[in-house]
Length: 108
Image 1 (cartoon, rainbow, N blue to C red):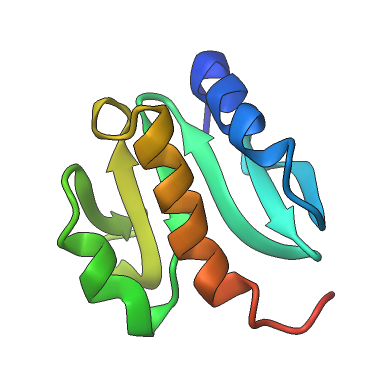
Image 2: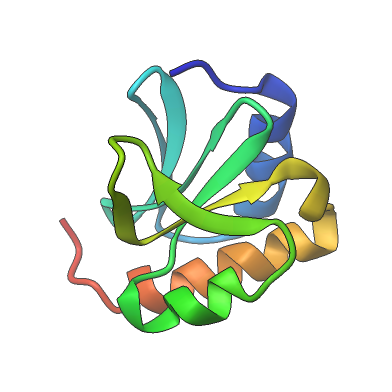
């Protein structure tokens, strides 16, 4: 899956001050990992965030969010966010939300 280099750069800007973050090429795109666990990523025109099942309803209530569906079945705990709905301040809030879930997972 191709990715948008501009969106990747925006996400890198948010990630650079965080600890435990690594960047990894996956599925033809780029994902960011928190202590080895997938946190978020980019595709063309949208972001992906791993928010976990308990925070999914909160995530989906935000502007520009929809369930992540690649195979015809939504992936629980993952959401797509349209790039236009996530300018810099909102992008930081999305990363914070995903960190609330992924930050509780054991390191890999």
